Length: 535
Ligand SMILES: Nc1ncnc2c1ncn2[C@@H]1O[C@H](COP(=O)(O)OP(=O)(O)OP(=O)(O)O)[C@@H](O)[C@H]1O
Ligand SMILES: [Mg+2]
Image 1 (tube, rainbow, N blue to C red):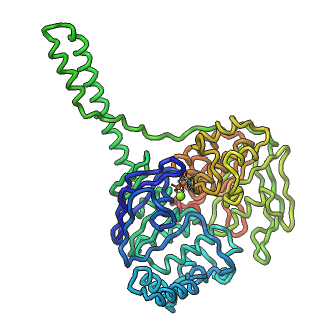
Image 2 (image 1 turned 90 degrees about the horizontal axis):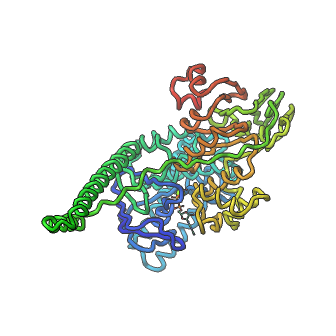
Image 3 (image 1 turned 90 degrees about the vertical axis):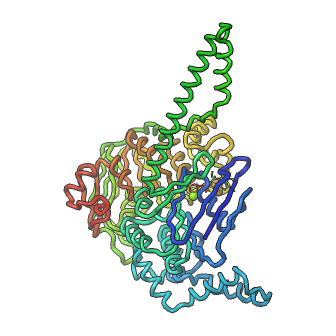
């Protein structure tokens, strides 16, 4: 239904990929993977004609309906959640205008017209609203929020409203750019099940191994500016890529040894007249060989160290008898909690139980209606919110963002640390508005590192990060000298970091003095993923 041939794209002389081929058939499930900034979202934009390729073609079957979920949510105006989820927001008026214009021009036998017509029919189907509500519920929405203006909601919730809209339309091809980023575990599992039974084709960009393993049957990987395809799910891809490397590396080594032996023979007998011609033919043999390239060795996570921050007091933070409510909606009543220096605490609990609220209370970003909040002696708090793009000035360069975060930093120091986060050479002059999702997340991490706090509060820090960068972050946080409190739905991340678990549900925060395995055992949750959201 969609065929891409020999695609090439570069920005400012930097080639992202070339000779890229990709084919999607009806009903197929494909993952597009690769490191942050490799060009995955760019391929999507080219397919959607939002961007032009330098070379190559994209062909699409005329009648296919394509639905697209962007990596970062678009503006929502004054529309309500349900207006967005039904797809009516802004669309009905626009489609009517398009249809009329095409009719007036007498061009109704075109793909553009049939697409607009089928969209229009789909939106006006009376079952649409009921279906939209079902999707919203599945994605974790409370009934009471359906009629609220979407702009009151957080970015993650706006994205879910857009996602619901796509699921309502049921396009022939669903293009999803990191759809699990803003889903909590319960909605994620619902969504995964839903997609399993989805009849259309799915092309997804993701950094979520488990999600891809459950869903996809082939993987396209952008590596070294090439787009390589593999059959099977994500784990199968990792295995094949590894085997390919081992095979090619062995072949390379064998050939090198062969060359060395031939060369040694030639060197030894070149001046012996009876063997000179033999020596000569060995050299010829080397020349004639089809040389095997040395394969790129698999990338390892880069290591970075968070500089030791000034030491804080033994009690990092305390909350005493805290009452907190959003309007009438009570979240905490009489909450007591203290965080000790050096702990790495994860907050877990069901969707909407107040994890982010608790983190904001600890950060001093929210003030409780009653009770006391004390930050410990010498506390220097860094809060890494869930919505990080907003913390960057779109027209500032990467370098100036970092320099602004730490006034005493020298430019070469800033460039050094940016370099280890893959912002190389000229890339530090990029405006932040052109950065990929993962690049924005990395830049925010760098801003922390240049002026490290001794209490780090992180809300879903792995969102948008590629798999290797997550490993790098884990290594850095493991040796971090300060105190860490975080929220995550990434089991691997939690497992390798948490020394303490706080389970938040029904306004109660219960502490487990032990790591993830201890929590699993004590809470009796059994299944690890289920434990994240259990009440
Ligand atoms: N208009 C532009 N000018 C210059 N560079 C750009 C522009 N748009 C995108 N880029 C760069 O192109 C690269 C690819 O971006 P893209 O968004 O496709 O990455 P991605 O693979 O989706 O990454 P992520 O996993 O972080 O989402 C990035 O390095 C980005 O900074
Ligand atoms: Mg992207």
